[in-house]
Image (cartoon, helix red, strand yellow):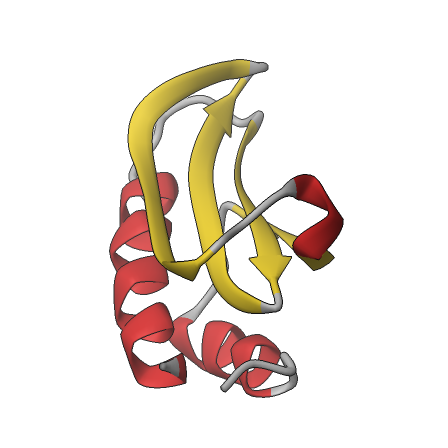
Length: 86
């Protein structure tokens, strides 16, 4: 599952890194058996959203992460490898 997550997040991070505006980030919610991610620019959510795995309710959220512009693929792999996912 982590390889698929890295692949999907990297697509969004490349999009994030191409944004002109400075106040963009990728917000990720980590669930017990899945994740969601979306790009937020100046508090405006755009259509770059995805989910992987089983989400369930808000009580299944076990963490979150925010990736800022300039995140490298090595940074992404390092961060995701520490998540407690199947």
